[in-house]
Figure 1 (tube, rainbow, N blue to C red):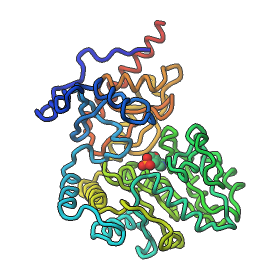
Figure 2: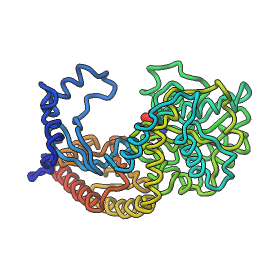
Figure 3: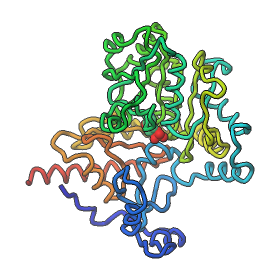
Figure 4: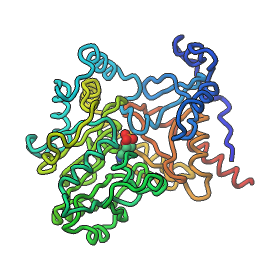
Length: 437
Ligand SMILES: *Cc1c(COP(=O)(O)O)cnc(C)c1O
């Protein structure tokens, strides 16, 4: 299928001369535009992602520009990362100030930014608990946060609890430990043997959970909404049951909020919204936490908070003051601008509007993590994504029948509406092409 781009086009002229020069590639002889950079990309960068569709040179708010000067509304935000959009002044200022003051220390030292962030994350993650019961480990990414959580699970399990449970279709990252917790065979099999003892149970099936849990299980790890699996929610009550059963079995409950956390659902943590009474032992964060600066975190409470002792885990960059300053700026901005309220309101209005589009079968997710399920008979979601990019909208297809939206929290109502209109046009064109063929 080919869906022609809109006749008017949605590209715009870049406003500032530097960006224009960068876009034309005149800052770097021989690489004009997307095509030139992509050729150099394939020559120099390992082919782990396939060849990217575009070369982005600039971002402002919810908008980005590619090397040909075309403008896009960024509804993916670096996959749920740029929660305040691009070039947000609060992050720019916090990062610049910190870098001007003290950019990096080793873990032989701490910094005020690191301590403030750890305290803040404890209160955001476990608002109902006394702060002294919880502790934070700072890492640099989601996979590293889950790697640390896995090590906590092993410390809890010892030799008497060798099993760790994860859900089918789970995604927890790409390092060897996190990969062992990730379900997709194509990601795992080329790298076996992986750390052992991990078993996958059907997501949302409480009977399967009940029969899998026993005194030999160290931990259960769950994404409250399975993002990479296509924004799939767990059935109501599942997290509550998981908490009850893991507690009975003496296993830790680890909630992976890497994609769903930091306000994306409309609450600080998706599990706060989906299962308000549930207190996990361990929560992992990354993606939106630094608003674009790499940082991950593990927040653990009770016994789990004390399982990693001196020398048992570490990282050179984790807890870096620049990354911590970025995360503190993100949290402060979400708070002061009531962005949780914004995410909740825009997310629910938008989900209703998207569900009414002809060709949309189902809208899943919470807040601004939205999976748009396409009706049967439409072209694969990847083709719809390409047609939307032609019209100036960045989204992605985590599954062949689903388009994922994870835009910045500062997205305007007008940008959201413009996307709904573009989607409607693209889907109706796809349907009429199919009818005509
Ligand atoms: C993206 C993601 C990860 C991995 O995070 P990276 O920063 O890419 O390592 C882990 N868990 C979930 C739920 C994710 O969405």
